[in-house]
Image (cartoon, rainbow, N blue to C red; front, side, top):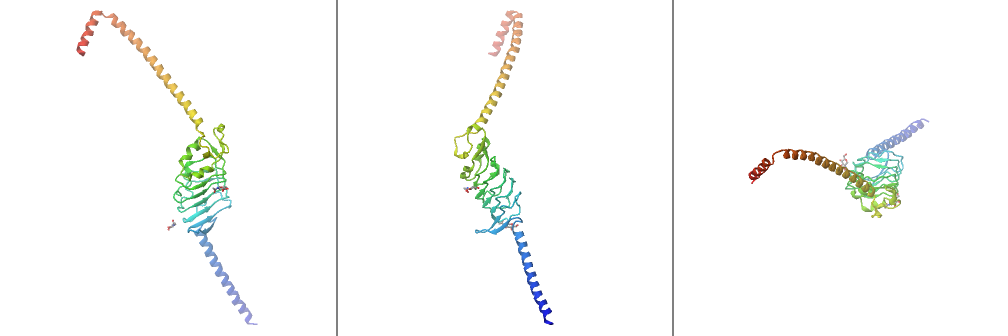
Length: 265
Ligand SMILES: *[C@@H]1O[C@H](CO)[C@@H](O)[C@H](O)[C@H]1NC(C)=O
Ligand SMILES: *[C@@H]1O[C@H](CO)[C@@H](O)[C@H](O)[C@H]1NC(C)=O
């Protein structure tokens, strides 16, 4: 009868000890996970070294800024991002793949992918709300980008911007025009780059032509009016001068003329 409590106590303490031990281990593990990877995402080691961070479908509205600096793959698809701010991934010099597909992205700020130029190979921006193509967002990038499934607005600005990017050329074939300016050029539904003959800057050129014409006409009018004014003013002068000359005795005039000629010679 006296054994039982002691035995129980012993067993109890062993269990307690084990529990405590695992608790300590668990806290250590969680602590480790929290410091070595992002708060809101799941991290694994990539096959080729570095880390893979998965933040898919987490209702995120802002791009996390706490990824480890040896991250190689980031999956941020199916979230609620509306914009990619400048330098959003600047601390990740080894990033190879970035998936931002299936978000609400309508804007990429200039320098959004700054710092990824030498490493990034795949950039997925498909199924977003991108309307205007901002070449400054892609500065330095040579990645293959998926730009499909966005409501692209094709206009002169886009035509000017596309040749300025270094993205893998096949990427740009994913830009399918949903709207266009001018509308009558009918690029709607076309892959923009697959229609190389279209010139969306034609209207802009026409407007600049008209502006140039108006400006030139203005200048021309000013020059003509000045000339007319000048001639009239001088006519008055010339007339007065002529009258003055006529009023002089004609011989004196002739001798003066010959004397000036002789001095010139
Ligand atoms: C990551 O940052 C740490 C310091 O915070 C540095 O020692 C390490 O070299 C960096 N690793 C890479 C891959 O850049
Ligand atoms: C681009 O993304 C779309 C959907 O998001 C997908 O169906 C397509 O296969 C992707 N294209 C490439 C070349 O990866």
